[in-house]
Amino acid sequence: MGKVHAQYLIDEKGHKKAVVVPVEEYKELLEDLHDLAIIAERRDEPVISFSELKKRLGADDIL
Picture 1 (tube, helix red, strand yellow):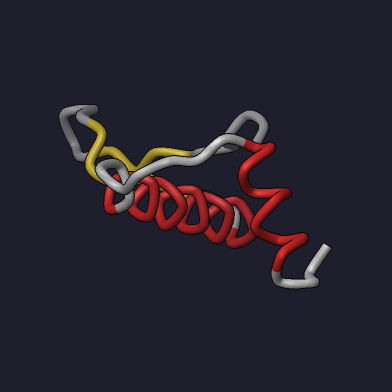
Picture 2 (cartoon, one colour):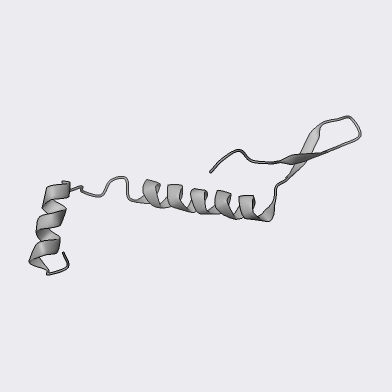
């Protein structure tokens, strides 16, 4: 994702109180947040090498 084009809503003292972003950028931010949540959930799962993955997929006739 590139630069976020945000606008800020401020109170009478000039303090930022809310952010407005274009809908498409908002959707991209939600997707990124979802992806990060999945990564965090799977952090402790065992990992395998790429060659092992290819071997397993070949054994299952997927590759």
